[in-house]
Amino acid sequence: MAKPTRLKITGILIALAISLLSTFIACDFQPTVIFDSAKSGDITLPFLTKAEIRQMLEETDSKHLPSPVMEEEPDYNPMDSSSPWNPGKVKQEALDLALARINVIRRLCGLPPMITQEAGNNSAQYGAALMAITQVPGHGNQPEWPGIDSASIKKGKDATGAGNIYELPPEKIVSAMDGYCLDPGNPQVGHRLLLLEPGQQQIGIGTAPPPPTGGKGANVVQIYSLPALPKDYVRKEFDWDFVSYPSAGYFPLLGSFFGSPSLWSVKLNTAKYEIDTNTVTVVVTRLNDKKTWNFPWFGGWTSASTVFQLDNNTVEPGDVFKVELKGLKDKSGNPVDFAFQTEFFTP
Image 1 (spheres, rainbow, N blue to C red):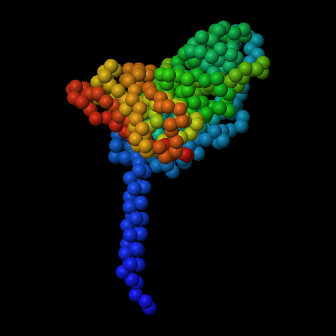
Image 2: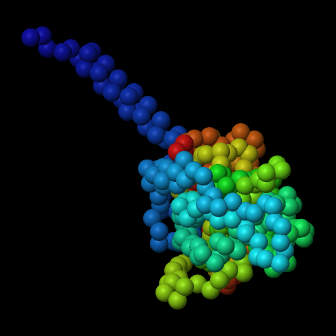
């Protein structure tokens, strides 16, 4: 057998060196999320994997809704205002799936799940039905309606005035949860921030189809004026620094959740940070190509939150973004290094 020549050996070594160098270069320019960096929400919760997120989204997909969603439709032809109006009833399976969906979004952001109670759902149902029959979207501004008793009108107006509303039919009850958190067209992302409030423990959910005369359906998620929590309910206490959307770690690049352009938001724990809205700024860096954006602090629903938006078509699967807050101080007035990373992926 012929022995390999020195030239052949040298060629092999050079090829191997080039291969290793190419691998090193490729790795050097393929950023990944730093999973020991800051976490959105509960700082003790582990980051979710892509597989876990995909499973959670699959299990709460709207394809699992019962058909029809309504167990009983609202009375759209009320004749006797001396009797209580029937606002209809949503099937429990649909309510459970909608609640599970918003709790998936909360878990993505590191927040504990919320609950619903029958009385809270019934209250929200009055709001959704009143909004649908009057075809008046708004918070507590629905008019009196022929044949509907005043007590039912008050219940409906109280519900629409105490939370989120959406002109969507019952078959979109799950999609509505995504939509509230995407919150398109709302520069303060108030719907999102209400549902991602760390201390929020329960909601009420209602939905109603369009009336036979035509129009739009309605969805109401009641946030305030809900019944007392069950006596056996145990509130989960947790430590948190901030809540971001998109959250730190992996985040699904899904049109109903996030796309280009979409609004980003960061809410800080004011028990830990002093926020001078005149000096704190946001710096976002896409680590894939080092492109950077700078934003002033823009108060969202409260001064503790900021909202910003990147250029059109700047977010793609595999993109990793680093978000930094400059000029932030703790409660003692000491400067704070604040940063987290988000990697988008296709679920």
